[in-house]
Image 1 (spheres, rainbow, N blue to C red):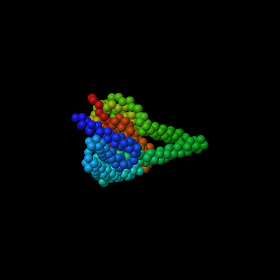
Image 2 (tube, rainbow, N blue to C red; image 1 turned 90 degrees about the horizontal axis):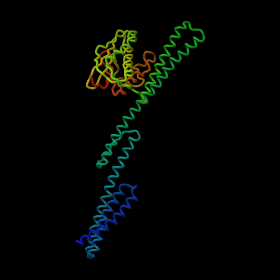
Image 3 (cartoon, helix red, strand yellow; image 1 turned 90 degrees about the vertical axis):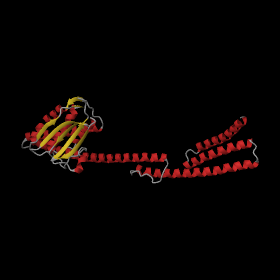
Image 4 (cartoon, rainbow, N blue to C red; image 1 turned 180 degrees about the horizontal axis):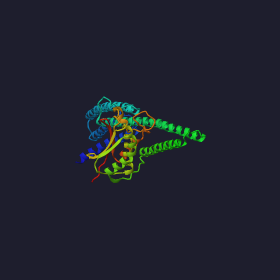
Length: 370
């Protein structure tokens, strides 16, 4: 028993000394290549075995021949271990470099393409994560490009919309000032109309900026959809009469929703105004509300003749108008963007689809218990 403990002690001392030297080498070479690290690890393992074996062999007073045999066996094992470590390190390093090159491609604005060579489980997991990150970055770049395009269009359109009424206001005010206006009252009424239009545009811009900044403060309360739609129809009735459009709100279920009534009235008001202006005289704008598995669906159906399929995905974008007109009733192209922003702030969603003779705007809101 005592001899066994001595053998274990000498083997531990020899292997421990080699291990300490190896740990120091790893610390000094921690910033070097993976090939160097794996080589050091293999060398430490073999050296520890060799040092432990030789320490025990010397203490056991082996013959020179036996000691030589043990040393040769351990040396051959060391050569094979070191060669294996170098090959493994070079294989892992090559796969790592290929992965680095692939990662650099999507970092420069491209998409990530996984290297075709087989890799270890850890590098495979890293590859999968890089592919997921690349897809997210591509989607983010696409959203950024769409937002930048929308912003440029909005700036161009708003600049034109501001310049036109301001030029008219300036011309009318100069005519009044110079006393050359044939009908001053008509000029004053026109000036007031343009000022109200500008005020409405500035209000829409302010509302949209609050939505984009996430500063839209909601004060939700429980209200019946029937009452909400009734108020919106009453507010849009004068405009419908002016355009000769019939408003229909018979298919409205009395279901409760928990919304900010002021903001949701603006949503329905924008949808109704948009529908009335796009529907020809003697046309019909129908409002409906019903409970669905997804919540409560409010819909506004008009007679605009439909929206081109390529434009359906852009209807709620900031600045979209559906035409190139810059004069009323085209508007500033902000109403539907405000609709989407307010609805999404209520954890709902806004959508549009073509129907026979027109299109149907749908707003889905979370349902509440009766």
